[in-house]
Amino acid sequence: MYVLSEVQRTKKPLGEIDFSSLVQKGYTQDEIVTACSWLQDRLHSDTKIFSRPAGQQSDSFRILHNAEKYVISSDAYGYLIQLRQLNLISVNELEVIIDRAMLSGFEQLTVDEIKAIVASVILDVERNDVMRGRTMLDSSDTVN
Image 1: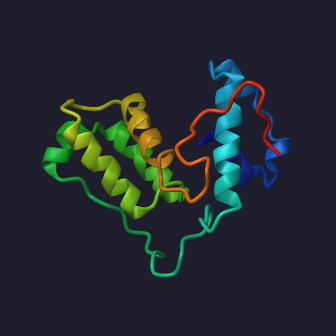
Image 2: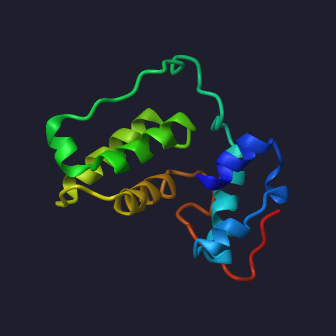
């Protein structure tokens, strides 16, 4: 989310974004490169990152049912709202994430726990190429 926020805020290309704050937060170089690769794939695919497709222009958002509020903490739900507003997840992906959270058996999922569910949803989306399902780059891989 940091990378996308920086791209949107600074209007700089990915190659010019300063990732030192992510390294300071404990992210590895492989994780940063993987995030950039995923974002690059999304930017060059049919997926619209900063604008929503026609028919999804509403500023409305999903309200959690009481049972869902019991499982998803308000901070975790706030994180989901941010992802949705940045158009990193679709309405359908949001529903899948909430469904997986409900089936997890946890109570009051934290932001870190919901991030794991989000990652499993957005990184496992159906892709039509041979790289489908690959979520981490090898140390010798580069992002072009």
